Image 1 (cartoon, helix red, strand yellow):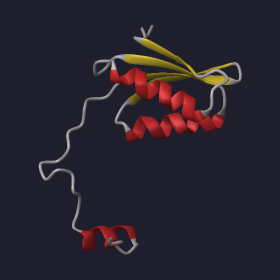
Image 2 (image 1 turned 90 degrees about the vertical axis):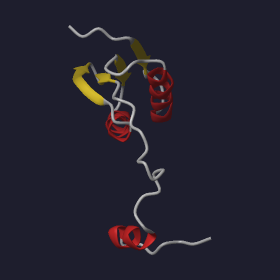
Image 3 (image 1 turned 60 degrees about the vertical axis):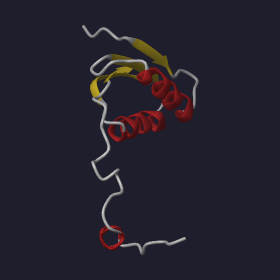
Image 4 (image 1 turned 120 degrees about the horizontal axis):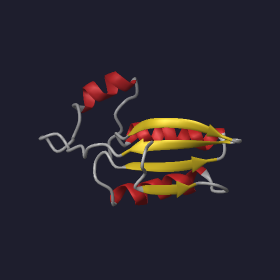
Length: 105
């Protein structure tokens, strides 16, 4: 049985409300602590998946509950910026990789 350090009840909340609750809650937790997120609809479920991936957390378990979903999400390790300050690839390589021209101010 998983023991959660925090519960984010997204019942009757928008996607933004659930994600905001997860953001606030995760700040206070240690890596590998688990949050239980309760969501009611498929769009919010998909947004939780996307948010977990963006933030380097991981879904430990997902369960159906009635018309909603329960997510057990483990906080990921803190990711540090690369030594170059996170500037990313040179503009020419970035433009080639995305297929979009670089925009200059």
